[in-house]
Length: 148
Image (cartoon, rainbow, N blue to C red):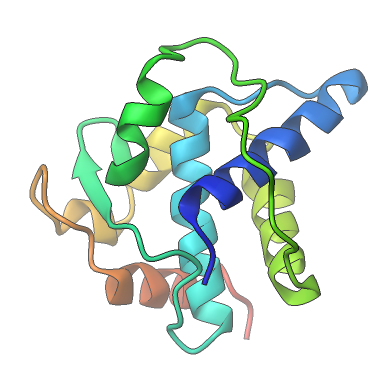
């Protein structure tokens, strides 16, 4: 299991590497959605095992890793260049999953990801401020994103 800040920094660095190829830096809104999907995809590929232990909660703009709110708050809507975290070694299987999430969902704007998460049952079936069930996230990803 990884620390959510390490996975967040991986996404920040991955997006930064694409800027010269026409990509965009991440904002906190987009980063939070990518972390939500990373957790779901990781769990779906690993029999429900979590990528990180921090809770994902229902907030008005979609799923959010609650523990990251204080860290990301200072960025507001500005690009995130770094969270100043040294990423530990991430195993190949995990990197493959993170790259799947980034390749398939990182292409969307933050607001498109908000729209997408709002259309999905894990967010819809959770009250504002409550934790979104990791089991529900995992099952939704299995049912709607992973080809059998």
